[in-house]
View (tube, rainbow, N blue to C red):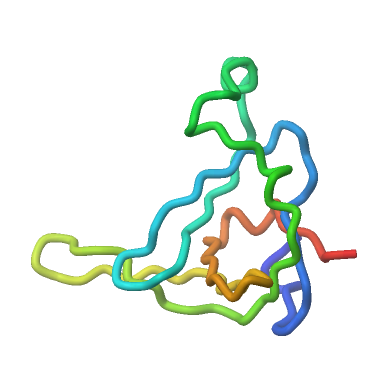
Length: 110
């Protein structure tokens, strides 16, 4: 999916690709998660039980798109760093941020 095709208020989900991995990290200063999506290598698929190689098939819940948002990314020297991210909400109300280059692994929820 392309960034220009995203519509606020629409439902999306992570593509159901068996080689697609997901990494979930905390967002500083907020109760939200940063999600990065990437293709797993053969070695990572073989060692799938490892905690850091979660498969994206586990994340097939609908995500509501709320638009772009500037997210606090931490300190860079003495200055605060802010990143542009796409803001989604899970059905449980938990916020999720996905960065632009990972949007290619998002598809409309059907």
